[in-house]
Length: 211
Picture 1 (cartoon, rainbow, N blue to C red):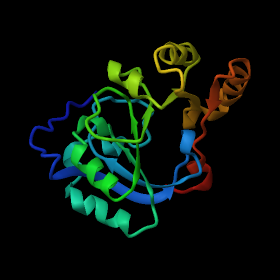
Picture 2: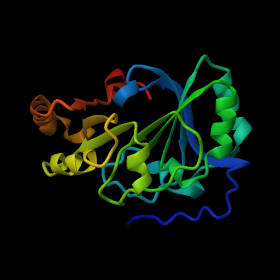
Picture 3: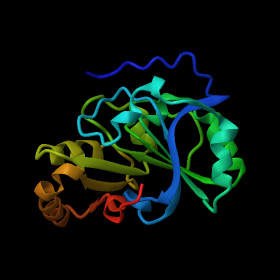
Picture 4: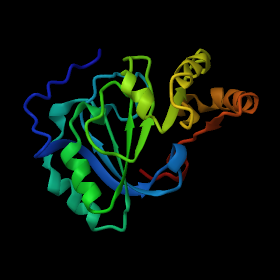
């Protein structure tokens, strides 16, 4: 059952619910292989059945962390690229967080289902639509990268429906759902060969056994 998150008591100018944070290598999409500091915010009402971080869904299970405390450990590394993910990070007004990160010269990407309008300043918008909750129209306008997870044969046609709506320079990726990779990877390879506007995204961080 999908969870309805009550975020009315959160003041995003002061703090945000952070599930975890870590400095690693981006494993997916356009920035695959790039060092990145991940901020995973808690809370999600999209309800993807194959989500591999379902523990991020419940808001109450994770602490509210002050914005400056979220940024502090990032500055202790050499990271110049931050990925804000979730959960569903666009549930929150990210204006304060992103403004403070930008003031430190840090490039910002966000991974989102596009179900909520973005509030904040980012440099790279990775739009990964889900069948479980429809995206807002803004997601198609902002998307620098469209990443569609393939978990069923019908997902190829579904991916094309979204590709028709994004801007012309948006990068298009098909990514096999991890638990069904053996089933669908060859199909994705053949599909991309026949439709070269698409690229393949793999979860290379899982092959490397890193977060």
